[in-house]
Image 1 (cartoon, rainbow, N blue to C red):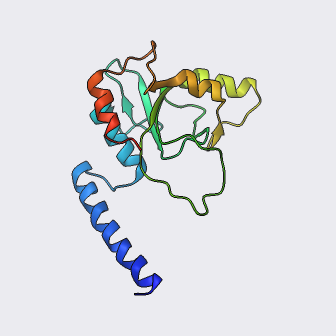
Image 2 (image 1 turned 45 degrees about the vertical axis):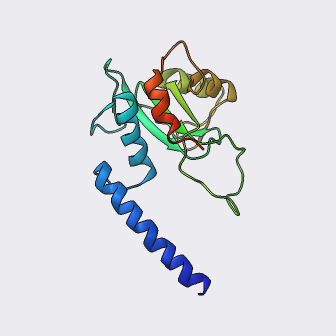
Length: 168
């Protein structure tokens, strides 16, 4: 079997898996859609179709859900965005070339950012707000709600068990 034959075979297998995932979540099996579906299941977020947000927490705060299979310190932000950013993230890695690596869909940590405070911090430092905005390490640490416990947002034992299903 040649390399191209095997790659074609693997893509067909991946397409079958993606079709089953899409059937279960009701949307294409893209990382963003899967992350939103997981957030609904774990955190009870109610999805919306409003531009710039994915949904709302039970307390009414708007949220934009992101899933980054690797936590590289970057976050896609909007000037006029949600109240909160909920970020599902894989292992922390330094920004580098993806050549020779993999990007498995895992959740090793969850972060909850106050959007207004995050945008204000970036503005104060003269940083760009938009795609791949660079967020300070201290802000990532302060926003972590899983696996570390955070007094600002409690993640229940059942939620922790569900998140652990997706860990590396």
